[in-house]
Image 1 (spheres, rainbow, N blue to C red):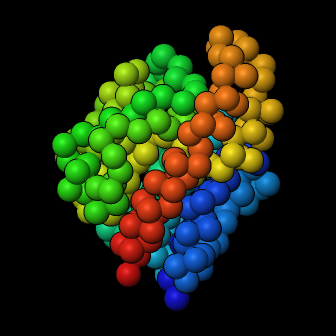
Image 2: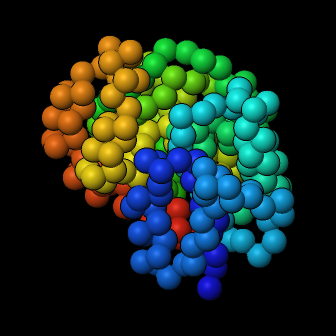
Length: 232
């Protein structure tokens, strides 16, 4: 049985439907909760895959959050071994940084936004079943260019590189496609000050969630099953 490591940074941004699909496919899951003091492993060892979730911190916070350095070091090891990687939002930024791309603060993108598939996504093993355009929840202010040598998979109006694949098995996805309605509600409830400061209407996010979250979840589950298929 393959074992997948999931790194979670804070309570409101867990693996959601990713974990559900991994367990449903018969894989073992080991969680590292850095917010609860868990340490990031230094070696790949017998791990079959790595999932790195989102969080309110950023790549630029490595000086005060040493676990981010440890995560980038582990991502580099997984890249060398060519084992499957899935980075969501912050996880995508950390993966981009591990690949040498510069992650910088930019325009905030919070709420349900239209996401576009790029040409490489139409033949991608994990994303090919997604429609050409679809709504997804985004919640970030840091941006990065397409890492050198990576395939460009997704974009939005404000985020040129919202998804990429490096090699055949390393994925960085900025949209929060892992979330259920309950997870979005929890995230919004804990972020009201941030939303007000960003000029984002809480009621609009909740209204959009009620409209979009179920079809987005169905699409995401197909993706996670595709990624799980890379674990062997």
